Length: 407
Image 1: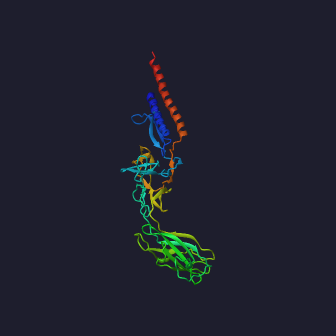
Image 2: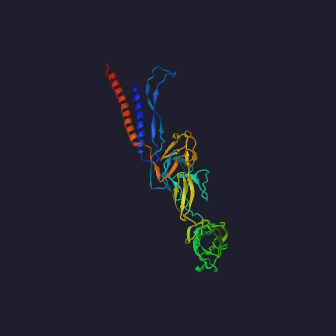
Image 3: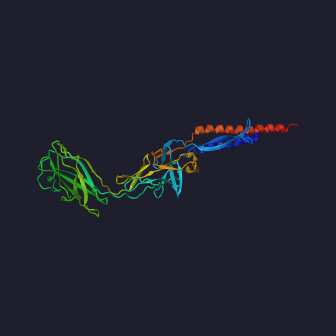
């Protein structure tokens, strides 16, 4: 029986060496989770399950478990590298097969999908045309190269100071005659096709104290061609605007096949009339031309924000994470992939930083959680265990040889 005891010890120690060696071999693999062998002793029992002073008959490997503690996060130069800080798994999908992983080494394929080295698609939630994330069933995330459509200008805001020391102008206004206006400024608006149009505003102090007329032209017209202008704006004795804003009902004629006229409201709420030189401090409008994606970033909450050539930003989608009641029940598939089992429980899908799910860090990777120092010490201990069990067999062999040699 001692031979069997020693042999079981050799088998257990050998299995332990295999697991430790696997941990060491994968110490540099992104997202790898170390394993640990759990042993159990073995006893012989009598027929009725009892006995006095039973002697053990060796050991066995009870199970091999994985340690899902957090690995060190290291920074990389690839914005598509993602690290999970906290609990959760990336949800991967390929031809209907759903797997889960902690490895965040991603890239874009030729169709704009976010994939790993196996070609599995990263799952998440897509955003609609307005940039709102639609959290229905998770699906492969895609970075679209399509242009975002233009938006026509509906509001124009200007903040400026009109010099209260100016002389009133009584001559009829003419854009080509500087003597018929006091100050001027220009800005750009966009039509329904995204074409830019220059609006030039002209300010003329009228005969009434602190009252100004605002004229306008579009695209360098030689005569006023904006319906709804001129508008009259007035200031109080403190230099603050006293006219209600915004100026509505302003129609701007545009050409080039876009919807015409362009209806825009003008807001001069921040305007002043102090005894200082004319100056414009702010010009804003809410339209923009079409734009092509120039880059994108990941937020800690998994939101993917695209940056476009027209200066706009828009939410493209959101990465989904998955948690399990018993992650140690997952089945290992290799290549850093896991599959759901009855022991792991059903996958609980959510977004980063929601519930118990961790946050995302872009441009970073979670390293293996293998502690090489600890693994090497365990390797020495496992080697000693193996040698000790081999010594047990050697000793029994010597005892049996002595018995055989008896006369």
